[in-house]
Each structure stands twice: as C-alpha cells, then as structure tokens.
Image (cartoon, rainbow, N blue to C red; front, side, top):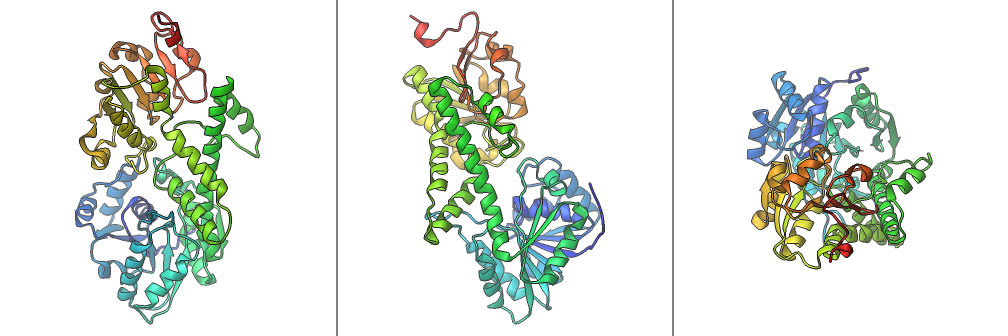
Length: 453
C-alpha cells in the first residue's frame, strides 16, 4: 500500500453494499474514522462481528483489523452516523427503471435523512453511487429541503472491479472528483492523496458522466468482440487470434476483447442502458449503445444454441452448469448469464446441477430450487452428459482433462469463456465447443456428430 501525506477525517458512509463497504474499510485502513450506516439490522450486526456480507478477496481481513483498531464501526441509526462526520458519502443502489433510467428513490431517502441530521455548516456530501447527469443537483435540493445549513456537493464515482476491489482501491487508474467548490475538491483530494492514484478534477456533471461513459465503452468493446466471434464461427476464423492481432495495436489494447457469453453484473448492463436513456432524453441517437446491448442479449444464450444444434433437444439431459456468479472472485449474481442459462436449460427439459465455490446461496435466492446446486466440482460433473462453462473460476480453468473424461458420462463441453487451449484438449476423448473458435473432437471415441452413423 502506498502512503503519502495524510489528512485524516471522520467519514460516514450511507450504504453497506459493495461500494459502501469496500470504501469504508479502505478509508479506515488509511487511519480515518469511519462509520457505515445501513437500515438492514441483520447486515449491520454481522459486520459488527467482523463478518463480511459480500465475497471480496482481502476484505474480511481488513474489516476485522480496522474494527479491532477502533477506526471502523457500523450503525442503523442515521443520526449517530452522520452528526459528527466531516464527510458523508452516499453509496446506495441505483437500479434501472423499466424505461432504462436509474431509480433514485434510495438516493432521495438518504439525502433527506442527511438533511435532517446535519448539525453544522460546511459538511461535504460525496456521491459515490452511479447516478445520471444532474443528480447531484437533485441531491442538493433534497438535503436543502430538510436543513438551512450550508454544505458542499462532490461527485466522486467509483471504478472498482468486483473480485479485485480492495486491490483497485489502492492501485486504481484514476480518481475523479467533481465539484463547484474548490475547497471541497481540495479536501477530497487530500483524503485520497495517500492512495497515490492519479486524480482528475472536474465539474460535477462531467464527473457524473465519466463513470457511465467508461462502463458503456467497455460494454461496447465486449459486444464488438462477440460480434467478431460470431463472424469467426461463420467464416472459419479464430477469435482469439483476431483479438490478439487487433489488441496489440496500442490504440485498441487487449482488455475487454475476450469473446464469451456476454457481460453481466451490476455495472455494465445498468450503465449502458442508463446512458442510452440519457441520450434519448437529450434528443440524441442511442443506436450504438442499443445495438451493443442487443448483441449482448443474443450472446447470452449462445451455448444453448450450440447445444441444440448438437442434440436437437435437451429433454432429460443431465447438464453440469459450471459457475453461477457473473464473474470469478465474487458471489454477485446480478445480471448473471448463468442464471439466464439455467432458466432456459430447465425450459428445454434439461436436468441441471450447478457448481460455484461461493455464489450458491445468492443464486438460490434468485431462482430458488429450479436447479440443483453444489460447491463441489466433481459432484456437478458426475454422470453429466454435457457441461456448460459460464464463469471462468480458476478451479474450472485448471481442471485436469482426465477428470472430465472420468466423471462425465459423455465428455461434451460447451465453453462460454474459452477456458481451454484447443491443442491441449484435442488429445483427450472430449468433444469441445467454445466461442468464436473451431470445435474440437478429441481422440479415441469422440467424433463429430455428422460422422456418427
């Protein structure tokens, strides 16, 4: 961890979800006094005991450490949380409305609570939640409707990747601070200075737009790679070689050019849809963003399409679904492609057993007993007639190919994350279908379906 000049503060954070909890723990690690506020008493009680409520590598250790040192605490009482703070950070959820815009009801509730609890002038209110352009003006009005005290607004969007959020906090690409108050910008800049991360200072509306624009650009890049992968399958190319060839151009880069079964999670789908809505509201075209989302939607069921081309129907087939979280190293299943595949597989008559090392509980909360679950890879694969790889957990990427042959009744793999090397797998009796690459029919008993009489 890099440390420079310190400006220790009393920080209150509204919300103990993904952004709020990680931010609170990391600010406490730098020596700040942090109190996190949430209405969920069960969650707060767990956190007070040092039990993390999300899966994030390295988070639990830092949580316990800073609770023990007295730098971090939690409460359900908003007055206790906000009254002594120098800085109040809003980090509550902003889900999409049906029309694609972001729902600000939780932001509004928190803003009015903050207004009622303020007891002195010049508190800095920081918005870390992803919000549409213009939201900070609304937050200011909501707070001002409950107080006559003066305060400053700062837009400070987060850029954390789930699965590496603690690392990203201390090693990020940039920190964006947007405000109309130079004094507020300076205070927040000093707060972040110990992280040693480049800081961009902007007006509030530009800061609000940067987060949404960044995630939408990544979504565009992924959808472009997936569109290319479909072209590769039609003309006989290999998307990995194509992605490498274009990604070595420094103007393009290799990140987010991995073809697969689409993007999920709480950020890319939501922010892309919200930016498209914002464009339409401004009277501008959203066709580019709309098409990226449409490509992603079609890509989500690509493995089902491949399986139906192979088998005609999946009625009664035993399927191992490998991975439930939307990406590895997190238990987050929001907008997870795996859950959409699970529902469709069941609709096709398949008997599904899903494996995930950490996300089973969250998946069950979303789709219930629609399928069977396990946190043991061999249990999911035992007797399976086919396997769908949806999340590239290390345990899945590194599974010995002999185990696939031994455990499965028919080692037929539909890989939505291109986990395996084509040359390595072809020496095993495994039938292997991936995204944007040639199918492999391994040695011994595996032959292409058209060759089977």
